[in-house]
Image (cartoon, rainbow, N blue to C red):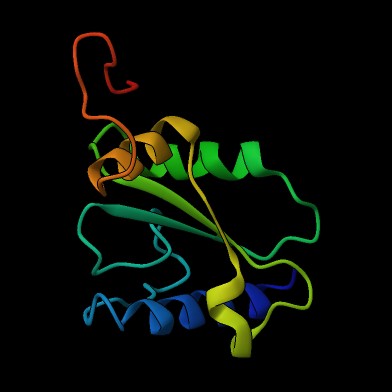
Length: 119
């Protein structure tokens, strides 16, 4: 991945997210942490690498969340998915987080003692 391509897609991700989070912005490249700011409670890890390494990508996002309780999300831009198709790129979250999001959105059973939410 070239740094220019990675930076271009960080800016594109922030632009795409502004439809829901108007304050979304890509911080300077030298700043550690989330690749997009202005989306409270979410840590974004933007990836354009040719080698698909989802476990490493999600580990990095979780490290950036640093136990804050923020939701780590990896956005992976596969080859041939570009600016015109930003909504078709891949968002990757650990399964335990996805289960929590789905239940919070009204899918699946309510949490009961028999069915506790994943930790």
